[in-house]
Image (tube, rainbow, N blue to C red; front, side, top):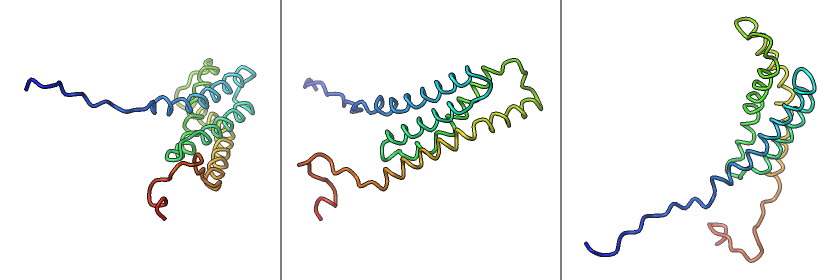
Length: 152
């Protein structure tokens, strides 16, 4: 109608996409580096990988947003299993994995990664429990609360 052109609605992401990914990259890099160093030291994944996995899970639980803290408890076993499988495949390339040898290799990988998964889950559970038990932050001084609690 000859008037002003209508403005397109702007997407307001506020950088949330980047902020959500960065806390996940540091623990993943920590687990991968622990696996690389442990694999370079000798066959199998050992204590260094376990320590890196526990530290990474605690860091992920500490930096996870409150609404998505369940990810910090659910993702470590999957990430650890994936990193361990890749590390084992890259370092144990001399053995062809077909049939019964693949089953044996899978059982061995599961046994190698169990201590790391148990340590990571324990670390994540401790951090998430401490976050839940610790009194919530009231925010900056002078800041008004919104919602029902503000009127009570």
